[in-house]
Length: 165
Image (cartoon, rainbow, N blue to C red; front, side):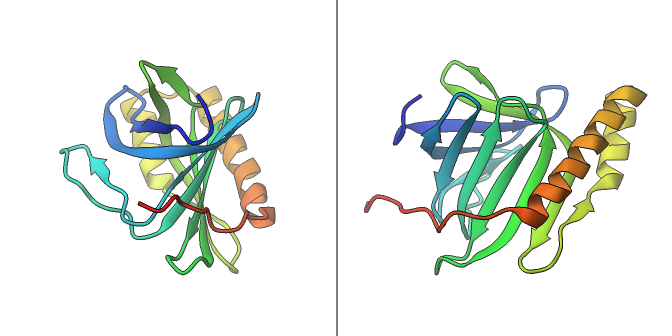
């Protein structure tokens, strides 16, 4: 994985089902994380294979030791307007694809408002469907509490720069 390289990303349910996939460009790689970017207009495919181009510029942070990933979402004009954190397993890499298992719990912050925990109903449904243990549920809520604090104190980088097409 090298800076500037295109990478295929998949968001998966706990059972491994791919429900969303897209291409992104690697902006940076360190020993503890990978950061990707995608411009407005990039294709995102849903579980049915339908293409839904994104309307905003995205920068995504995936930590190798954290149970969440963070999206900086920018208006096409460059203003940061949304921080979104998926409570999810750390990324996995196989056959040139980076994927993560999304555990349905999320943190959302529309700048400048404070962050809020969302989708607790989806998490509750997933806990039943995938038989999450009490310990696992507690671990995901602990990650969500950490993510709430992170979202409220996050200092976003400037809007990503994309190569001219």
